[in-house]
Structure formats: C-alpha cells, structure tokens
Image (cartoon, rainbow, N blue to C red):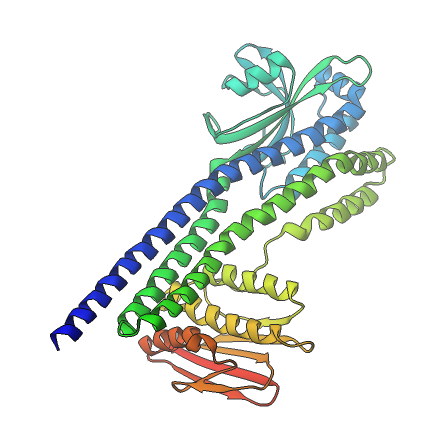
Length: 442
C-alpha cells in the first residue's frame, strides 16, 4: 500500500513538472513569436509604404513638366492637379489597409516643409491643401531632403499629426534631373496595433488551449503514464497548430509584399494609361480601368466567416488546409461576436471536430467533402460537422473512431467541454459519411 502511494506521488510529481515545462515552452514560444512578428510587421509596413511612395514618384516623373509647373502656380483648378489628385486618392483607397497617408512635399527651409498634393479627399479631417506649411520636421525628412534619396523609417515617430512610420521617395525631373521634392507614405500606430491584435488573439487562444487541454489530461489520466504522454504529444501538436495560425498571417503578408513589389513596376503603366484616358476626357474608362486593377489586388482581403474574430481565425486556417488538400469545405456559420461561451471552449470543440474531419477526408482518393453548420438560438449554440470517410468505425470507451490510434483524445476533450456547459453530443454514420451533432448551452 505504501509503495503504491509513493509510486502515485512520484507520478503526480512527474506530471506537475511536465505541466510546468509544457507551460513554460508554450509561453516562451508565444512571447518569442510575438516579438518576431512585431519586428517583422514594422519592416513589412515600411516596405509597403516605400513601394507606394516609389510608385507615385514614378508616375509624377513621367509628367515632371506638369508637376514643376504646378509647384510654381499651385493652381487647384488645373487639369494636372485634378488628374494627379484623383490618381493618388485611388491609390490610397486601394492600399488603405496598410498605408494611412500618401502625399508630396517640398522643403521651405531646414525646419519647414510645404505639402503639395495629397491622397485625402477635400472632406477628410486630415486633408491638407496645396501650400500647407508644416514645422514638425523629423530627422527622416531632413535626411531625405538633404541627401535627395529614398529613406524608410525603422520605428514609429511621434509627430504633431500622430505616431507614424514613414517612407520617402525623391522626385526628379525626367529631362533635367532637377530635384522636385519628395513623395511620403505613412502608416499610423493605430493601424499597426490593429494588425498585431489579430496575432495576439491567436497566440493567447493557442496558449490557453494548450494549457487547458494538458491540465485536463493530467487530472484525468495521472494513473497511466504511457496514456498521458501520448495524449500530451497530441495536445501539444494541436496547440502548436493553433499558434501557427498567427504565423500564417504574416506569411500572407510576405506574399502581399512580393505582389506589391511586382506591382511597383506595373503601377506606373496602369496609372499612366488611366491618366491618358482622363486627359482625353474618358473619365468613365479611367475609372473602369482602375477598378479592374483594384479587383486584382483583392486577393489579400481577409476571409470573414462569422462575427466572432477568434472563431473566424480558426475557420480560416482549416479552410486554407482544405483548399490545399482538395477538400470541398461548405461553411454556414451563425456565431455572434460575443456569447456566453468562452472562446477557448469553442476552439476546442470546432478545432477537434474539424481536425478529425480533415484527417478522415485526407485518406480518401475522391469525394472529399466537409460540411460545417452552426446555428444560435436564445440559449443554445448548435454545431453540425459532416464529412466523408472510409466507413471503418472502432469504438473506444463509447467514442466512435475511424482508427484505433490516439485513443480519441480530441473527442474526449470535446465531450468534457460540452459536459461543462450541460450540452450534448451525438454521432451518426453510414458507409461513406460521418456526422457529429453538438448542442452547447449558455
């Protein structure tokens, strides 16, 4: 009896140490990922600002005579001003998610600059008319003007108009090489924070899921070391996959930057074509042409499946996996932005059900389909996940499994969460499809 008690105590101590180690690894991974992502995001945003500034500079250079003439008379009724203002507003609209301001300026003296043409409409609260004088000169401005070269900021700087990360590109006369000023493009701290918040939410959810699942496994299965270790590996892998959804966002940003880098060379041709249309009076044709260009940029628009941002990030990750695996993923979601169920509980339910569905479909040579439907009532949230599978079912502790390995760890976690909300889970299957129904009360 004493020997068994000592063995149980040692087992409990081992699992406490494992839990602490697992917690430390998850927290460290999340912290390091956040720091790397924060630094990389600044670099990416600075590059996007520079790419847009360089595009505008290239367009202005094509008609540098017109710009030089406008600098002398500042005639806001001129055709050149209207055309250039329209193009810059359109560029600002296309890039609004990652660039806040786009403008041109010239230097008045060492501590003063004058704005020339900006991408803000006249009704905007931050609209600056041609000739507007600004005394809030930054070191980056001075460097760009003094050395007449491109300068990209490395960090956010406090200015009289907010905290901004800026990039500048010089404008030279196409024929004479005369320095005509700068094109500036800024992104604000608030835009940066809104992008980082997505990564923070995904990281925190991943950490909470990992800690919660591992704690449940330790509490329920502390008497079977081998079983716990297998479950720990499964849940650790699941938690890492959730955390990796945050990294996926920045991989997509890399793809967007590559696309914008290419478009930097193409933009001036597109915009020059539109400018010529406007010059011939074909405003409708120019607008239609720019709309087509804008539609081609819509590839980086984030998918929206429901109002709940955390669940939206999780579903987006599985939608991308299904697309890569050639699985048809039919989604019908009705999940409010907030409800009386913790987000991490919803992630455990949906994440494990979809993980099982993806694994089952991945074994099939054809007819790979997953259907996900949710509905919310006054006090219930209903889930239905239906997928094709190979028709083989094995039962483990009352849980139907399509394979004997892993002991149904995912569905065990799902059942525990559902039980905690006085919910129900049922299964139906035939020779080629498996359906899970879940009702969770809140």
